[in-house]
Length: 337
Image (tube, rainbow, N blue to C red; front, side):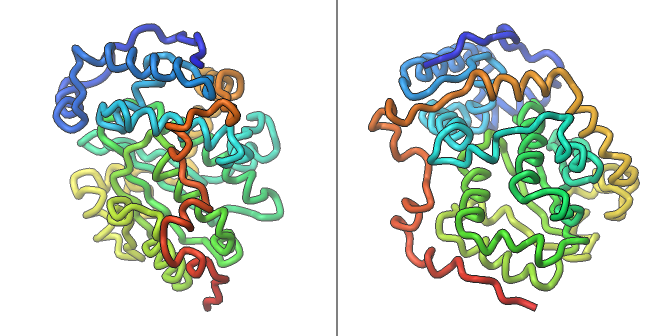
């Protein structure tokens, strides 16, 4: 069932450079003259799904079409999964029960550079750096941290350049410790984190680069690369560079690295704390408040009404275990030095 929310009006390409419109046509099968018809088709499908209630504005639906390269079936599955992880017991709804921006956990989150937008490459890719090393477990639970980080991810999903060109994520592990990484010992957490990124976020991930990783992370990285429910295409996007900043610059792109990388990673783009101002401004913007408000008020999943044709859209921990081999043995306690 579709929601009538459509505050943004018909989609236009205002603000999008012509070269990226052409790139979208070439790489995403996005024909400008047909975009309105594609959005209308996805909106009709959403209206025919009795288990779903969701906003239907053009810009929101277009996110899913772009990631799906305008394949309606893929866009439908991605949208269903997006809603399911947020609003169904099959997903992780507690991770999307966002707190008020005035809450203690959000204030703690915004006081440290957990998730920082560095800018766009010359090819229009959004570049972000995440660092869980700032996480004080005495001040924030794992679930509180994930909620705040997902609030940041929502902002990335709204960026049109990133929708078209994709994003690059740097995971700086400079201050990470074993206690902070211990959630990987929990199979459900690990599965849900990886599944959500791979199957339920309308984001084109170009690459994920682990930087300054400690020795104990080798075991965790092996765990990720060997996870049987992850697609090989997704695994190939994961890289470790350690303290080899020359290799980091190469992966980012030599022409953009100095301009984008923060001082802590050998660039000239200010310090991470200085760059956090973008995140703080976003969290205080009416644009993001509207996004989070619509998620609370205009999205709902009723599993009792789900049609059989959609029941296998979202992988669950049990279904992934049944469909693969070795997953039960993969998730064992990590005893590493």
